[in-house]
Image 1: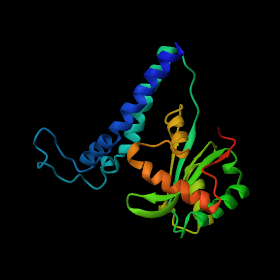
Image 2: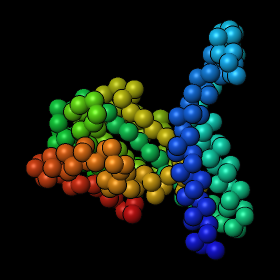
Image 3: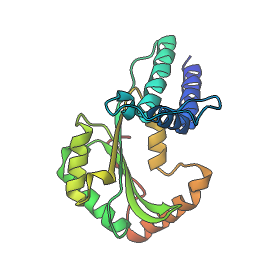
Length: 211
C-alpha cells in the first residue's frame, strides 16, 4: 500500500512539474483575453477592474496539484502532510562568502529560521550571481520573512521570492535541490558551486533541524 501510494504521488508531482510552464502560459492568455484553436489574434484587453487581469498562473498550478493530491490521499486514507516555505534570495553580494556570512548572522539572530535548510549558489547559465535557496518550516507570513531578509541583506524586497507549500507538496524535491541533486543540464553549475564553497570554507548546505 505504501509503495503504491508513493509511486502514484511521485507520478502526480512529476506531471505537474512538467506542466508548470504550460499553466503560466494559460494565465498569460487569460490575462490578455486570448482565444485558442487558431484564433489567438482575436482578443481585446479586459476592463481595468476585471479580476482576471491579475490571474495568477502559479496559484492556479498549485491549486490543481493540491486538488489531485487530496484525491490521492483520500484514496489511500492518508493524513495531511507537512507545510514548508520556499525562499529565493537574490542579493547584490560580490561573492558566495559575503552571501553566506550575512545569512549566517541573520539565521542566528531570528527564530524564524530555527527549522530551515539552505545553501549558497552562484553559477548560473546567465553568469556569476550569488544567491540563496532556503527551505523552512515556520508560522511566519511570507511578507514578514521578506521584510526580515531585505533588511539584513540591505536589498530591495523585489530581490526575494517567497512561497508557501502545504500537504508535503515538493517537500522532498526542494530538499534534494538544496542538497545538489539536480537535473543533468545543471550539473556543471553544481560542480562549480561545490568547488567555490570548498575553497571559501562554506558548507555545501546548512541544515538547522529540518532534515
